Amino acid sequence: MTDTRLQVFCTVAETLSFSKAAMLMGMSQPAVSKHIAILEKEIGSALFLRIGISVMLTEKGREFLKIAKEILTLYQSFDSLK
Image (cartoon, rainbow, N blue to C red):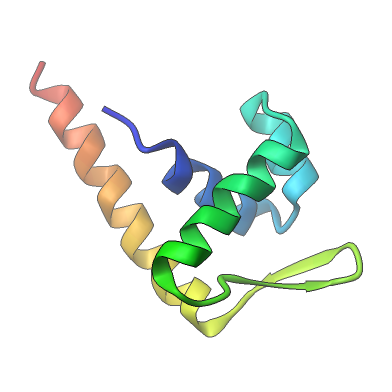
């Protein structure tokens, strides 16, 4: 079981780059941007500050990163039951 959006979010948060995250995940940069935009819309808050080509987590993004990592860990635990 996976949640692609959470994986994309965590990868962008770790690399602080939409293009690096896209490369690591084998996606296009616009696809990564779309996943992040959907998450931000669902949460109702920006997760990243975009300053030129630089990206950094907002306070809400830092909070969400902790939750996203916990959820992905739970998915891994679920997968190990198979």
